[in-house]
Amino acid sequence: MSREYPTQPIVGIGVVLLKPPHEVLLIRRGRAPMLGAWGLPGGGQELGETAEEAARRELLEETGLAVGRLTLAGAVDSIDRDPEGRVRYHYTILDFAGLWEGGEPQALSDAAAVTWADLRDLAAYDLWSEAHRIIALARQSFGL
Image 1: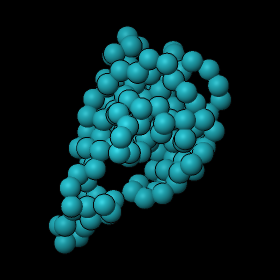
Image 2: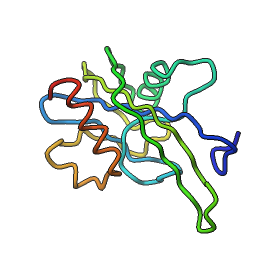
Image 3: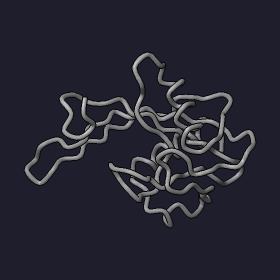
Image 4: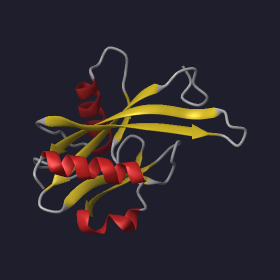
């Protein structure tokens, strides 16, 4: 199935990787949709893998980092329509949260850049409002 103009929603996976006390891992997207935008690491779930397996794979593929315990932080519906009103992209995104355990992130796979962003200055990254909401839920789940 094509990601652009799909016939049904696609399951997307995101990861909020927190580095206490005040950082979250962000990537700059290296391909559409949202080319060049800062956001959470993630991508599409593959046939035969669980959502959590997909989260671990995507984090490793995009940043080179592994993570221990993951918790489901929340879900997001991302629906983008073209000027004619047709659905160009439709993702149901399951976002997981985890705590950094070590290692330095690298921009790999479809990530053009990677950074530890200060949670007190996320406005500098022009994140999607849903990313802010999911990051807040992730921080709550870990008491940060």
